[in-house]
Image 1 (cartoon, rainbow, N blue to C red):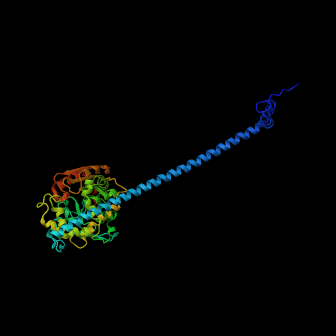
Image 2: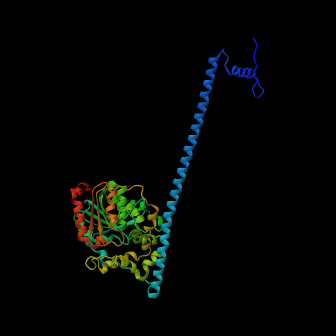
Image 3: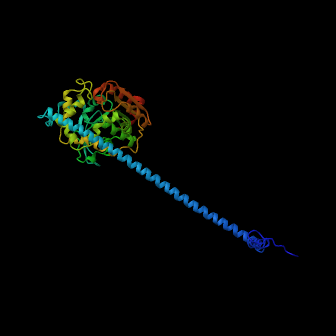
Length: 433
């Protein structure tokens, strides 16, 4: 048999190309013996490689997830730090602005009244109204835990339900004189001088006026008086403390009555979003300074304090009938004593360190009374308090009344308190006999 050989254009013969192709194909074929074993090994190798690829992908996903988590935490931390810095920048910036305004006012006073600007008188003798026996008996209690002595005025029969009154700034127990006379027939009424006010002890440290200490003071006083529950009534700063007592010691508050003082969370949120309220609250920032606010409140024989209660814009509407010249002297007697203004202002110097609150819900029934002419707090905050009350809530806006509500319109205030107390006759269930 003769083999023909055909040459390609590249000089290779067809037969040689065919032989090379056959030899390559034969080298790739598995051997006939053990072919199944070879296929299994090849399949197993593919599975191992696939598993390694999946593990590598999984490790990559874990690393990516960790990276994203770290980025989120970093972003959250930076955002929080920026917010904190912004918050304190606002506080100190506004404080500096208020200080500048106060310095201008002081300079103007010196120009107009150079001989009297830095003159003021400490009232040594208390006016007769502070010793009025119809208001009750002057008593003292020393709290074992804090070691502080508190002054209070009490009236009514021991064993009747306790009604405890907490005053605001710049007041003292005397601001509740109209309520002491009104409710002593049915209650054991007690109006306390809070820490740093009146005849109560005056701690020298600013940190001694933290909100948690002030709340604990009220709890300790209630227990010392022999009660475990009370009808708690607070105005202004006393209202803030009353709100916090109801939040942290709900079992202690039978019913809560607050006058012209919003829930602390409402005030914080509202002020940050309403420049008009921030402007009205400028004194909060000015009072962060040391010494200078005390000076500004003292110059011209405490003229600024007198104006708070008597001026047309901020003062009591019904002057003469409910607020007399002797009443003004009672306040000046309390606030002109050495260190008295510092104790009162230290409340403000702690407020920015504790807000916002970790707890906020009030479980007790609440009556909120609000003077329509309040020059310091906007009325819209009153209705917003409803969000933080999980029990019955009653709001009454009193037309024509100022911030000093219980002294401005005592008859209306007393009537509204009676109505609220008698709802359900709840007070009869909490007498400590």
